[in-house]
Structure formats: C-alpha cells, structure tokens
Length: 480
Ligand code: UD1
Ligand code: MG
Image 1 (tube, rainbow, N blue to C red):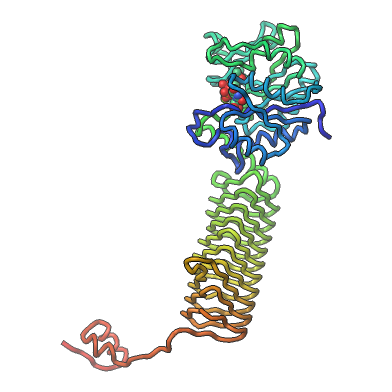
Image 2: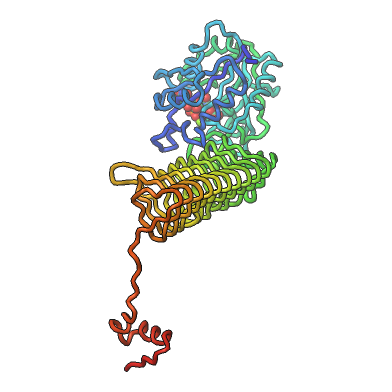
C-alpha cells in the first residue's frame, strides 16, 4: 500500500560537466538503463505518494526519458537560481499543499543506492521524530564531498562543503552522501532562509541542517552500511566503476538463483534480463536489455544477445543476436549474426557464418553454413544448403522468399525474391532460383556440364596439370 506520508525528490538538474558529453549525465546507462532509471526505480520501490524530479540542464531530453522510465513522476523545472537547496525548494512547490509527511531527497547520479538503505533511513528518521536525517558515509578519501561536522557530544551540528571547509574540517572522513529524509514542514520553513554567500554562490541544501538545529529541531546523520552504495558518478571513470559493481551484484544474484556463470569478470548482464535455473553462461558473454533465457540453455562463449528470447536447452555459441527468438533445443553459431526479426523454431539450426534478418525458420529447419537469409520464411524440417543467399533486395524494394516444409535446397543457391519453393521440393547445386518451384519438384538452373576430354594436353602441354593428367590416365606423356 502506498505510503501517503512519503514523497521522494530526485535531483537531476545539474550539468555534469566532468562527463564531457553531449548526453546529459543522468542519461548515461549502467546495466542497460539510464542512471536516472535506477534512481527512479529505487524511489518507486519505497511506494511513496509522490515522486518529483527536478530538471534544468538538457531539460527536454531528461524530461522525455523520465516520462518513458516512469510516467507518474512529476517533473519540476528549476529556475536560474543555482544549488541543491533551490532544487528542493522548486520540488516542494510541486507537491500538494496539504502534504505534511516526509521527503526523501536523492541525486539522479547515484545509481547503486538501494531501496532497503532508504527504507532504513526513513524508519530511523520516523523513530527519532527527526526534522532531518542525513545518510552519511565514512570514506578513506573524502575529497570533494561535503563533510559531516559533529558537536562535542557526537550529535550532527552542520554540513560544510569541501570548498567552504576550514583545514580541520577537511580532515573529517565522514561525508554527506547527498541522500536525506526531511520532515516537509521544517524544510518548507527553512529553505527560503538559505542564502548564496558561499564559495560557489549557490543555495546549498546542506545549509538547512544548521538552520533546523538552530531552531531546536532534531537532526541526525547515519552512516550507510557500505560506502559504495552512495558512490556518485561525476566522470566516466566512476561510470565504469559503478557499472562494474552493479554487474557483480547482478551476476551474483543470478548465480544464487541457480545460473552457472563460469567467468563473472567477463559476463555482463543488464538489469532487465531474466534467466531460468540451470542456464549456463560461458566467458565473454553480454546479455542485454530484455533478453530472456530458459532453463538448460548454454550461452557463449563470446556471445552478445540484445533483447533475445532463448528457449530451453538451446545452444548459442560465438553469436551476435538482436531482437530475435531462438526456439527450445535450437542451435546457433559458432559465428552467427542474427539481426532483428529472426525467429528460429524449436530444434532448428542457424550455423556457422550465417546472417539472418526478418526471417522465420521453422521447427527443425536448418541453415547450417555460410548463408544470408533475409526477409524469408522457411517451413518445418527443411534444410538450406551451404552458401545460400536470399537475394531479397532488387535495389528498390525488399522482397520475400518462402520455402515450404521438408524442402532440400542444395549448396550455393541464390533465391531471387520474390520467390516460393514448395513443400518437399529439391533444388540443384548452384541453382539460381528465379521462378517458383512447385511442391515436390527438383529445380535446376545451371547449364548441363560438358567435359572436353584431352583439353589440357592440347592447350596446356608440358604443364604440371598435363603431367598429372597423363599419369592419371596411364599414358607415358613425357615431353621435354
Ligand atoms: C552535493 C552536496 C555535498 C555531498 C555531495 C554528495 C550540496 C550543497 N552538497 O555536492 O554535501 O557530499 O552532493 O554527492 O548539496 N542539482 C540540481 N540543481 C542544482 C544543483 C545540483 O538539481 O542547482 C543536482 C545535480 O544534478 C545532482 C545533485 O543535485 O544530481 C547534486 O549536485 P552536485 O552539483 O553534484 O553537488 P555536489 O557538489 O556533488
Ligand atoms: Mg555530485
């Protein structure tokens, strides 16, 4: 049931200059979704009555992404007064006037923060009847962060930003993670009182702590259980580190759920991938986006699947596949390239050096070697010979090739689409099939072979070929 006394504010208006990117920082992806997507999912997991995201930099791109990630999020536009304090002030204005509960504030660039950590923070805040509860972290190197300044009795006194800190404050290793719970009433009172007289000329949200304490309201800071949970991303080095950490968590989760992952270091699994028990993942494998793999399937080595469905017991080796379906018991690769719209039926095969696109290959049908199958439909139990090309593009339009069931087409065929090959039909090696082949027919299109006996002896006398031919035919064809 929704917590009617809870709102979450996600700060995402900052520019993220250190990313040096045309893409807004919070839209850089980890585990297949934007960082902001992870934060919004965590926010939603708290089941709050309201989620508000503050935007400004690259406003339209960020707002569009938010609507796609979670259409129920309220978007609040920050004005040109800078700072986290201003951002929260703007967000509060987007909440219903009567809202008198607690507000969780998080940043859009802290993707590893989980709902359990925030739930604990909210519980601690409520148990203490706090006005503000800050999630802190104790770091070996606190450089860059706001420092938690505690009074003589250990209670939270205030937060000082790195750029405004005195020398002895810079020694403090307890930092402000940038996540907080506030009681909205006190926050509403204090935010308008924050000034911009500081090293950065911004309205600091962190200044609210000293103001609340001065007003006699209880404030506290609570260290997070693992510092990496609150690791923020400011540049691409941190982006890779956070992505690696998240991948480790995802891989471990699947291992505990019964998936064999031979080499966690070279296996990358996006957040939305779903794996069944007894799936086996071999080294060098990336499973992306909406990929789903059923039990007993073996994937890899060196395989990338993006939004691919793999049926039970299938085998996919050294393959690159996107937006495709691989049936149960089917076999793909090594060295196969499945482009969008490939459907391989149960027990079917797409073999070595085969490219497919927008094609259905029916149950038990095989395309074993060196082929391009595009815009095609193959029935069940058919075999497509080695080196077959569907000539689907006439330079203007894409046309379809239809092969029936239990057909046997020969090596090195070209199917010039649009063309149909009937059920149970055969074709001859090297055929160029331009006309439909009726069911049960054999189609050949190459000229009959002529052997010109003695041609080598006559036209290439004295050559190695001529000598070899002479020996093979038993003639003493020694010539000087
Ligand atoms: C902030 C905290 C600091 C803390 C650190 C943790 C303040 C004043 N300082 O510093 O104590 O240790 O986070 O990472 O809050 N944002 C807006 N609007 C703005 C400015 C920022 O929405 O006008 C957003 C940013 O997009 C970002 C978040 O707020 O998601 C934090 O902003 P950032 O500039 O990174 O703050 P820090 O200097 O890191
Ligand atoms: Mg920051």
